[in-house]
Image (cartoon, rainbow, N blue to C red; front, side):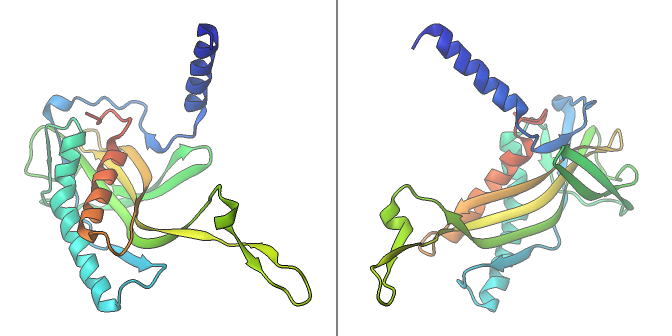
Amino acid sequence: MTRINICGILLSFTFLLSCAPAKFYIDPSINHEPSNSILVVTKVNEIDLSQDYELFNEENLRKLRTSYHELHLGKLPFNLQKVSNFKNVTMVPYKTSPQFETKTFVINPEESIELLVPKSALDYDLEGILYTLFFQDYKIAFELEETDTSDPAKYFSAEKLPGLDPQLSPRKLYRLNFTIRTKYFVYDNNNTKVVLAGNAVIKERYSPEMNLENKMMEGLNSLAKRIVDKTPFEK
């Protein structure tokens, strides 16, 4: 392959990437200074849990939700600290509970996100450049995802109809995922505005013989990366 052809392919790939729909809203005037910035991660009070495939009874589902909630509180700030450029990532309560209002943010021409955001600056016992990470509509699930295969023998099954030769009929294949779905946004407390917002969907391949706690921790690590990746907060 000639050098000119290689350059042409690289330019085409760059153009395709630049034309890809944005995955999050970001304030165009954001001016992030990481040297003295703190990210406060708010607690998630409600986490919905569902399953497409009956793996767990109701009692075990309640235990799983509690276990995941504890992992979220304990691991997510640490994971965010590893992948971001914040001086510190912490969880601290408000001194005064804020008031919220509904606002809509455009992620790309085909996607927008509606959020409850603070009406004014949040009251913390902290000094410096403060950002706050919020989550809304937080869900975890064990979901069946339809898969594709290039092997026709695996994708079709033979079906014998009365008086006819066996017919090939499509047979759907699925894989089981541990999935995290949530809206998120980062609030600039000094300038009282949302500077980052998006929908996060994290899928981790799962099967019953796997260690579920490890899979949950992998999901939280992926969530932390998803929030800061390709933003001014990325390390």
